[in-house]
Length: 358
Image 1 (cartoon, rainbow, N blue to C red):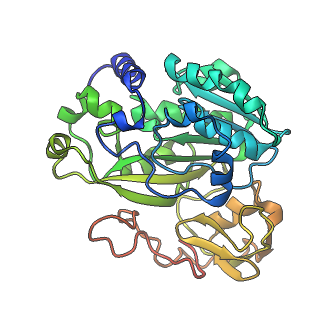
Image 2: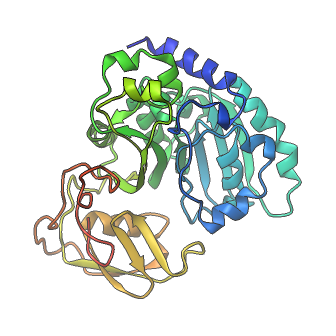
């Protein structure tokens, strides 16, 4: 593999050279699904110059951001940062972090445009920094409610450092909510030396299980998959190089909670969603296996209980039970590849959205 410094230089030069989204050679850095209505409404207020330089692969803006402090890692031209500023409102704060000067110039150049919007927006500060060291450089330690990132962590040669920085800057109960590219197996060294494939979000893609273990290593004990989609490389030459490896765009949420256990343990608990999160009047989806309908009793494991009761979601649920009695691990808490879109996968890691955990 190339040295970390040469990877950073190569990636920065690659994104500086791109004229717009159409300049990409694969669809790995493209968002395949339509945004929910609350994001779509905010997106209409974003400067066209910013949107033309957007290279994200997922939808990594969670609900309930009003009044929060948010960091957008690898913010690029600022599209997601400007959307979040509308959702966090006048009492919030957004930091956009990126290492590429040309991308930040686009983001900063649009500040006057977004300052003239009629809706209330939070202050947005764009900072030139490496995502492997941003917390120290900005001076953030347990100050942040949510960290988001859109198809950027795979570009880092030191992903553990990025995750540690996110963990460091988050408050207890805060979350890292991000989209990225993952592989069905470990990417071989020959591909990891290819500068074009680094820029196209292929070479740096983590094997999905390596990511899960790395997240747990730095303190995010129970990574939750929110959504996933297969990446179909639209370039024949690159497709041939990657033969035998499947790639996925996936969104995860990782909570900073020291109370989380390594596995999903059953304590006979349940929650009832009140329907009070503004963006989710009918049901709240914590992850791909937890869709909680308003007013319906929903059995949960101890970790899911804490992800709701010990975070910004606390007041939006009623809680049934406690931790007095343990009934073992939740049935169906599987260890296979979790992506619903994986070929030959009969349904991800187990459980179901109609009631029940994992």
